[in-house]
Amino acid sequence: MIILDGKTISKNRKETLKIEVNELIEKYNKVPTLAIIQVGSNSASQIYVRNKIKAAAFCNMNTRLIHFEETITEEELLNEIDKLNQDENINGIIAQLPLPKHINETIIINHIYESKDVDGFSTTCKGKLFSGIDSFTPATPTGIISLLEAYNIDISGKEAVVVGRSNIVGKPMAMLLLNKNATVTVAHSRTKDLASVTKRADILVVAIGKAKFITEDMVKEGAVVIDVGINRVDEKLYGDVDFENVAPKTSFITPVPGGVGPLTIVTLLENTVKAFKNQNK
Ligand code: GUN
Image 1: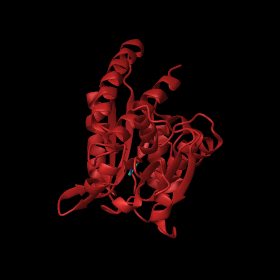
Image 2: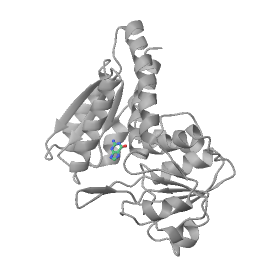
Image 3: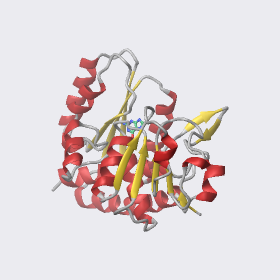
């Protein structure tokens, strides 16, 4: 069993990105910049946003955090996005999710210019992903594909099972795996006899947000297991996979923390640098 070391891979990719950023700064006399819109004080969002800012700083990139009270209206938020869309110093824009209930996330995300939608969450980007057209793709599933590739894990022709059907992980994950020629099944909370589905997987990706939900009996011998879950229980972090008991059965498995999470952030920064280059062509 080999641990998929997302932390080290992400560190190496940040080092590489930093070199490229320095060259871009030299060439254009401008710094690749990511705007982060945060609304309210969701505790998970606080941590994600802090980590994104820290990683960007490591790569010599700029971030502009625009933090609003929970009470901001949809219209005010749209006005802010208008300004960021027009601002030549901003290359990428993300709205940290979740947004408060009174704000329609789809409307907000679709207001971001496609050229700056480095999260790839807009309907246009998702449609392009669906059609196999090059676009920004969501950072978590894109990071997972790059992690598999970094370890030379074949995807083509493999049985891939994605557990979870969220718009930001499960669905784009399924599409990215399909584009790499996997045979893909998406399982979810209504799937009957989930274990019989997950046991088919050569590559099992789990993103459901339930600590230690995937147990040893649900995994095929020699499977590659990717755990997207980050669940806080009694101040400790657990993935969606019961790592201790599942790991010995697998060929490769991601730890939590230190697996998928760090790759999500570096992929977002890479997307921002790609946006910068497109905008400065
Ligand atoms: N909330 C949880 N994950 C993400 C992410 O990757 N991007 C944004 N914008 N919000 C999130």
